[in-house]
Structures are given as structure tokens and as C-alpha cells.
Image 1 (cartoon, rainbow, N blue to C red):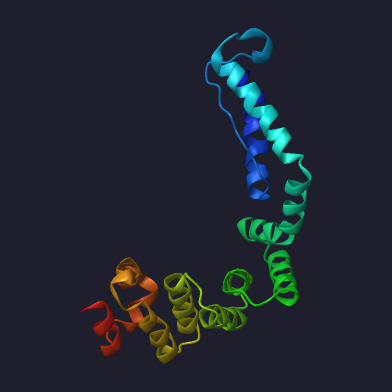
Image 2: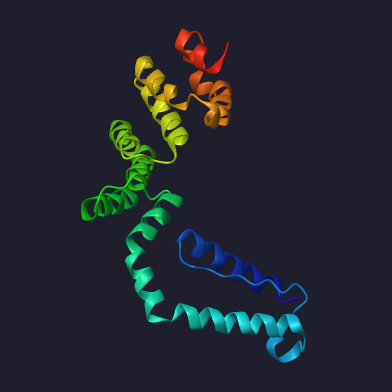
Length: 198
């Protein structure tokens, strides 16, 4: 029940926090007044105050602060991808890759950032590394890589990537590929038809 201008400002603050990939907890009290902690003597108001105090108690613990500090580079890299700040995302993912044992997710995310920046060949290299390291997102990586290969007019490479989405677990991916205009150049290929049907 607060002023619309203040509520819109809070919405913008929440959106900025989410875009920066920082921990955000939002409580919406649809029947509360401004200064509800003094005006609204009800269970909803008390519950919101209790939750706010709990949030501060948990957020200010040393172990929570240490965990967030340890995650800060990866969190900021993910935030950079979200806002399409490709140079920052690329730099941060490369920093992470150089500083720890290889992880498929880091190469996959680096590939996405490189693709966003228009460095398609480097993106393909990163996606290959993600596959080799056993990414769980085989379908996403394979489809993205096949599209990149087609940008270079490399039909054979695109088909090699698409062959990774055979099997029952990739039915949804195959359906989306078949309907995707990016793959029209492959529709007449026998391998494509074997995977996706005529």
C-alpha cells in the first residue's frame, strides 16, 4: 500500500541486485502500509520483521561472508554474462579456468561469453573442452556448436555436433533443432534426416 514511486524504486533495486548476481530476498506484503512495523499489528508484519532479522543474522556470519568471497569471481562472471558484458565475462571465466582444476561448466560459460562477443572459433574450442570434460548440458552445447559450425559453412562439423543429441533424453532438443530455421541448410542431408526424421 506504499506510494507507487517508492515501490517502483524498490523493484529497480531488486532487479539490479539480481542482475549483479548478489543474494536477494524479497518479501511482498500486499496489504502493508509504509512503516508497517509500527502501524500493522498483525502476523504478516511480525513474520516479515522476523525474516529480515534472520536474513541479517545469516548474512553476517563469518562463514557466509567467506563463502561469498570465495564465489565472488564466478558470481561476477555469471552476472557479466547476464548483462551481456562479454569482455568482463571472458576475462573472469579465463581467470577461473587458470586458477583451478578444469571444470566443464567454466568452459561452457566461457564458450557462451565468447559466442556473445562474436569470437565464434574460440567459442567452439571452449565448447569442445566442455564436452571433453563431461558437461551435463550436452544438448545445449551441441546445438550451440552446430550453429557456430554452420556459420563457417562447415556442414560436416555441424552434423558431428548434432549426432551428440541422439537418444531418448534429447527428444526435446531434436524437436527444437528440426524447427529451427538455422538448420534448414541441413534438411536435405541423410545424416540429418536419420537423426531428426524427414
